[in-house]
Image 1 (cartoon, helix red, strand yellow):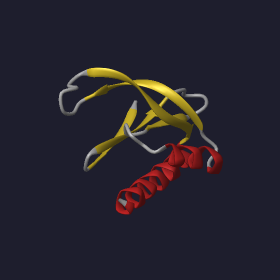
Image 2 (cartoon, rainbow, N blue to C red):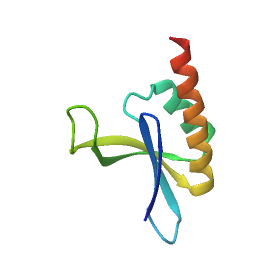
Image 3 (spheres, one colour):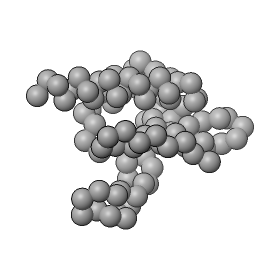
Image 4 (tube, rainbow, N blue to C red):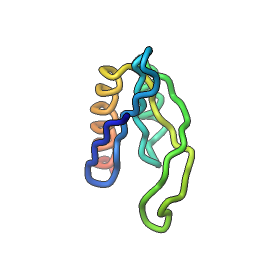
Length: 95
């Protein structure tokens, strides 16, 4: 079971992993700056993990790639989603 939210150019997926532990993943969009990733790991109670996802844009239709994700409890992962989205918007405005 998963929850998918689409917004502009990237998709955030919260994936329910284990029924007992109630862990969820938020898959990071390719190109997320390392500074944002590092900040999230330090600020929130999440693990940085790799997971395979199908890429569906440009000439990569259906390609499966290893992407980074944050794994944690649903409430925390939802906070991380908002935090990452804001940091990415700030990062884009800087250029």
